[in-house]
Length: 139
Ligand code: ZN
Image 1 (cartoon, rainbow, N blue to C red):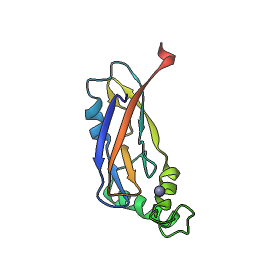
Image 2 (spheres, helix red, strand yellow):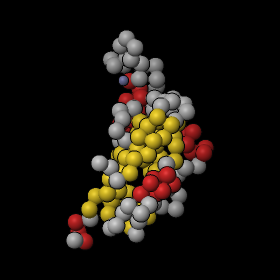
Image 3 (cartoon, rainbow, N blue to C red):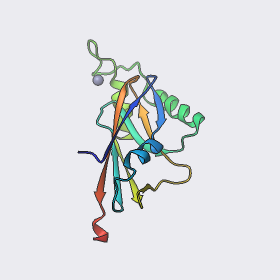
């Protein structure tokens, strides 16, 4: 059972949404010790990472993914109604999880960092889960 679970609705096929503030609110009062928050998406066509939530940069990520992995293929996965091989490949270039330190109940990200959900096959409603991993080194 995750510590927190967000539902996020995306509005286009490829988009990047900052979710750090929502995640901070969702874990508020639930974290009693410092540790690492495993933030993950249980989906095959979206990803999660850390970076700057500047609006131009969010568009740049989407456009760079289109250049790196064009939607049109050809792809072996795209048979019959399936057409989203590019979304699977794009999501895996970024990854499905990220670890964020939590100290005193607060996500420890850099001044310019946010937790970003990368939608690769929207619009859809996505789940972003968070699990606290114990910090074994501090006992
Ligand atoms: Zn597929």
